[in-house]
Length: 118
Image (cartoon, rainbow, N blue to C red; front, side, top):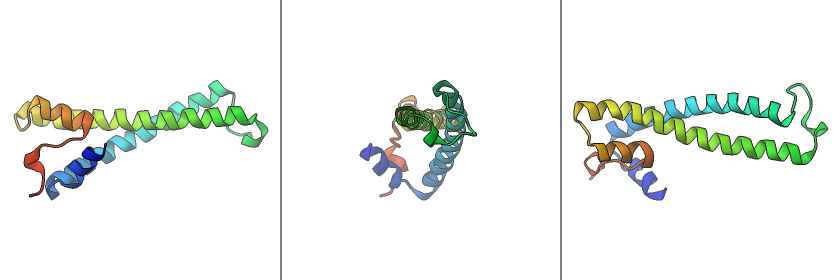
């Protein structure tokens, strides 16, 4: 994880902007998916949208929020990975990056050395 952050923060400006836009798009899509999944989870837990949370058992509310946090983390990762895979997959098709670089960028957030500063 720390290596992935260092890899992204050390990108040349063009590649940093590119990766930030792809990541932002993935996060927006993941956030939207989290909203809808959490809405369905509330039905599963029996939580009504128009009822105050203090009217439910504390264990139900804590379980619901724990599930929502797990869903948020999973959705952000999945949608960021999918958006990166789609965007950088086009670069792979054009021959700009290799298959290994595509997998490293999309799923591990590790960028090629030639994209790094210095």
